[in-house]
Length: 166
Image 1: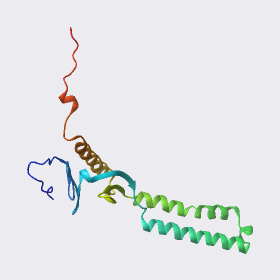
Image 2 (image 1 turned 60 degrees about the vertical axis):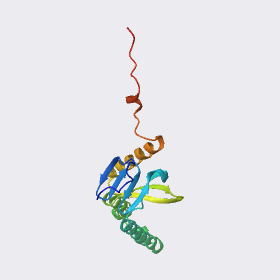
Image 3 (image 1 turned 30 degrees about the vertical axis):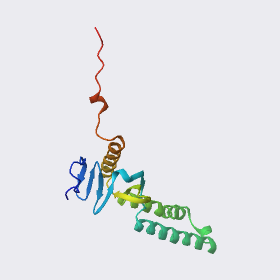
């Protein structure tokens, strides 16, 4: 995918480019959606929702185990259980927690970049890869700084270094 065309003479410094994601000084493009960097405000990062399958598995398992516990409690079956049965029952009640941990490791929630664009809050970018998300976010913040300060002026390169007089 090529960077979007710009007006001749306009700044078009490329800050990040991967298939489907382009960040230049002026534009932020994800897929077919493109945003003017100068119009992006209130940028924030967040984590997306947990995987629906893992959430459903935890909810169903917890409901079933709670039902079994209530059934045993009301029928008086808890009084006749041995110590080993109590240990097994306690271990079985840890299944929802184990499912939640495995689900979050297997399919972690995505990283999301939110911001305001032309008066409305929008999901600008979402990724499962933390490294790629960090690179895109830093490139976009760099583009905003360039737009805010009016160009690539390096204060250290433009200043005369201090030298002691001898």
